[in-house]
Amino acid sequence: MAGALAFGANAQEFDKWSLEVNGGFNKPMAPLTPGFLSPSLNLGHIDFGARYMFNEKFGVKVDYGFGSFKEAENGNPSTGTFSTKYNRLDLQGVANIGRIMNFESFTRSFGLLLHGGAGIGQVKPEENLHAGFKDDVYTLIFGVTPQLKLGKGVALVGDISTILNGRQTVAFDGASAITPQSNNGFYGANGTWWTGTLGVQFYLGKNEEHADWFIAADKYATKEELATQINGIKDMLKDSDGDGVPDYLDKEPNTPAGARVNSSGMTLDSDGDGTPDHMDKCPFLPGPASTNGCPVEEVQEQVDFFKKAINDGYVNVYYAFDSAKPLGYSTSAASYVSNFLKKNPGVSVEIKGYADEIGPEDYNMKLSERRAKSVYDIIVASGVDASRLSYKGYGEDTSVDKSSADARQLARRASFEVK
Image (cartoon, rainbow, N blue to C red; front, top):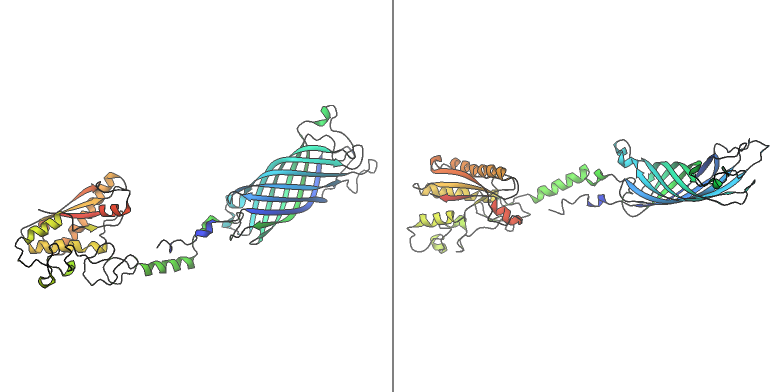
């Protein structure tokens, strides 16, 4: 049964690693020396990254980017040109907005990542006054990355990021220092630039999906898988011999009709005399088969023996958890008591309902009474006068080990007391 219900177990696993490569444009915004201009879209940036997702929503990545800034073609000829190389290394946090905002409700192929973090970098002018100067900076970076899934292991991505350089000393063009009166510019995030790139992400791992595209709801079975599982469960729940115990639990799947069986579907022989209860006219008194399971001597006190068997708890009706409907295999106990009453018109019986200790005590009290009442209805329906019967709920049976599932099953019962 457990194996049959384990569909989708692997669907909860996803790949966590990815590698990224991007290339495209950059734009230094400030500081620039008056007269120097940069193109709106300067083709000159490349970055590489490795990302790890803790789950389908959040992760971290480390990335390295480098490139160069250049003078616009239509810049001011009186100031000249500039060419400045740069590089940066950043550690960033990543948020998968596609999963956080449930993009799967309208698409399974488009995603969106937000990222931000900090790192170090270097700006190296190659022309003008500060040519050859290596300007070491710290960086703050924030960006957004749209994704288009191309297949299980790859996605096309774009990215727009804003980078702030801190403690930058010279302008991006290398032609001037930043506020030389302020300790060579060692203050705040005073350099601003951005990048716009296109690239690809490669997903590493053997699972069906990477965290970027994993959808928790997909762990549930498809309609086809569910239909297969339901059909399998139906087959398991078949009761070939009609004893109330499904085949997958029935250790004796060919018991004859009307036989009293236990919870494993095995025929009961309460007195151990070799004659099963349904054929034994004295099921609680050992006797040979020649006398239908009764002692050789005529038992004149048969009523007392039957009474003892009933009162000592050998005859019980059992129930499933939180149910007042008797389990099929145990309804024969009600039939046994009904036959006993019909053969002995001078006695009456109290039906006593019980519950296990799971759940609120007041609820269990009411449940135990409903269980007793259900057996009362069965016996009355069999033809026994209601005046000879009474029923009462006794609540929780605390005499059993409530940590044991088998013991709790024994507690969920209706017992009898002969008056």
